Image (cartoon, rainbow, N blue to C red; front, side):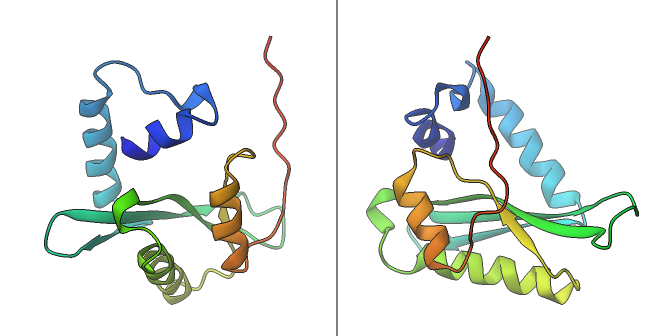
Length: 136
C-alpha cells in the first residue's frame, strides 16, 4: 500500500480506493498460492523493510518467445534505502526466474519516477516498449 501511495505522487491513477487494504491482502494471498509467482521479503528483524514480487507469464505460441517474467513490484521503506536491499531482492527474483528457464524479465516504471528509472537502468534494464496513454 505504501508503494501505491509512492506511485500516486507521480500518477494519480495509482491512488488506492478507500478500503483497498482487504483487496490487497486477497491479491497477496492469491499470489502466494500461484506456482508462477513469487514474493521475496527483506526483514532486518524490526519489520518488513522491503519486498519484491515477480510472476511468469506465458503467451500464445505464435512468437518465438512464449514465456517471460515480470517483476511487478519492488519497494524498500525510505529509512532502509541505499543499503542494497532493493538490489538483493531483485537478485533473488532474477535467480528464481532463471531457475525456471525464463530468459527475459520486464519491469514497468512510471515515466516521472526518476529514482525508479535510475534503479532499474543501473541493474541493466533498458527501454523496451513505450506505453502511451491519453485521458478522455
